[in-house]
Image (tube, rainbow, N blue to C red):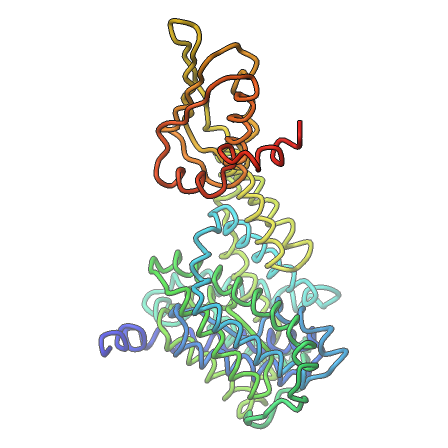
Length: 496
């Protein structure tokens, strides 16, 4: 226990504190923007980001990952807020947390193993594109000062780490924010600042019980939204955890992360905040700035609250150009540039899955839809590929009156038609032996195909023997097979 606390909280104090400060600064405009998307007061997003970040630092399964209010979640709240108001959103946030805790106990985090590498790459690339696109409004119809300061910010971010000693001590994104802010204040440059995004709260969050009727009608109103929020939140969190695992070369507890996200959202709903989840952009800022432990996430949430409540007069003066530079750095660092080069060498199916995931996410701005389409495509390509690994060989015995068919490979819904077509039912034989010792039957479609093969041979007057079934195949054939059940045979063959 003590060793775990030391590793997760105290092994990288300086790096975690400084990276947490950078993340807190970058969280402010995003939380405000996501609140505007959802149609609620900016303080709802800011309180949510503080609450979720602080709580997930203790309850989450992935140290160093940042969770807060996100755009993907905000998009799902628009209709609920518009039709029923903020109080129903708070109730939906609490229910979202309950559903996520249930998902953790059901071990749904283990489903991440079904997400292929090509889907993860597509998800990452799409998110990098969305992060960059989100900065474009800040670079449209502005004066040349904005472009100059953004370029200067990027120069600081990429060149500062090369300075002796100090370049390794201070995170370059933090230096970028401080320097660009100092320049705009010193020279009185009139450009858009954080204060122009919306009103910052001036009080600490307080416990609030959502002011909604506690009845079934309320439940049916919020349940569809909560279910969608829970699914999108967990999906984005699991994908982000996988990416941070890769960046830090460490592993994480996905099921604990599900429960942690749930606890954080429940608490957030009672503190006047909206539902949130892991943020890949902020998580990468944290990792790139030197954050590794739970302390970085906790500091990010704590600093966020301190800055917006007690230091708002200073925070309002931070130019958006500085934060745009940081987010462009994130988008460049997030994009998997090697995936472009790999298009030449990777299989066509892998490339199609990756590119389709990117296209769907960018087109819909919905990460869940993109990942779902990518996983579905990957599964179809995999099933098609495995379906071709099934062959049926045969040998005619010397007397010419018996034939042995040897089935090799996997028989399931994708290969069942090929399996059916591999037998010559019109050949005049007294006996057919089907050797299944090198085959495996996976589903009821495969069992149904075996039934049809046996019945077709028997209708031609041929005796059929099945040999060599492994235990798993024998179990499913015994349970669902009907070729030895006369009353079911006519139903299967449609009376023909």
